[in-house]
Image (cartoon, rainbow, N blue to C red; front, top):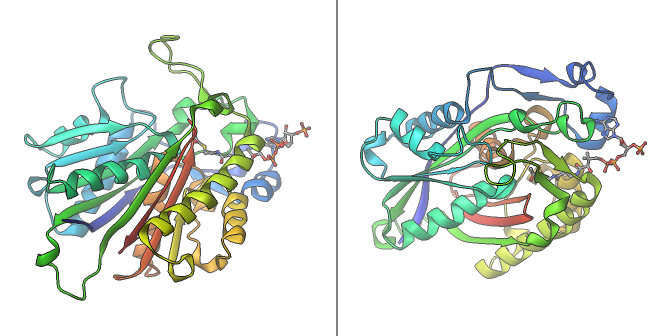
Length: 324
Ligand code: ACO
């Protein structure tokens, strides 16, 4: 069996918050944010607009792109660290909104690496016969867990969602020349660095939601080293030369991280899809949001070799190689 991406979609809340607006809330400037991160603006969910709402809209677009309906889907996986509620899973809320009374739905929590972890798990389930057609969604409302008095973190994040429809196909049922599908996924984690990036609340410890805390410059160093290595490992496991990859769709944390990784791997800047200026860091939503942007504007085409990667709290990190 091969897991093939059949459709992609994304959704951003309407409200755009510029760096200038940010400078009215905390001691910062458009120049500082742009120079240190590349971010110009981010989208922020309205009051009453929840992670499940963003994920649902992205799912509808991915289904439409695939020419399918919820009836065709038997698995929903939602990557999020900002669920609507502690439980039930945001995935089951989206399942209900889609009118699905069959199949299974669950959440995955790997912070900014959630979509890559989700692809790792979904790929394995589809290939082993555990499901036939899956909706994999990354959806976040990080604006709800930011400390809006901490300029070191609140300027970095935004809200949004992205989704893909992935279908399990028998190799024999595909045309000989059709090489599309997920080729390799590889995930890593190391809990020793928990204190560098975490949320200081949770149901068991504090009975509060808490706020995001980060030692930004230390996370930065780990991110560059670990991302470059996981891309090398994923490509090697797939037997693919990095020079043969057409597009890199990184987690959109910081333009300087994207540039530093590209330099290490000798990638051309135009191969690296960057939406960090418009979206900021949308955590588990950032990879599918960036990929959808590049598919819809015609850069990523059928048959292209695409490497996805992410790094986030935990630490967690990972990469996924696919032929679109
Ligand atoms: N505006 C103005 N000044 C600021 C701001 C701001 N928004 N934020 C911090 N500063 C100041 C600091 O106070 C510090 O001032 P000081 O020298 O007087 O003490 C100075 O700028 C430098 O601070 P650094 O933290 O060293 O700045 P750095 O160049 O490292 O940039 C940043 C900070 C943007 C956070 C960067 O380190 C980064 O992007 N880190 C990685 C983030 C990341 O990748 N996270 C992973 C995924 S997130 C997830 O998993 C949820």
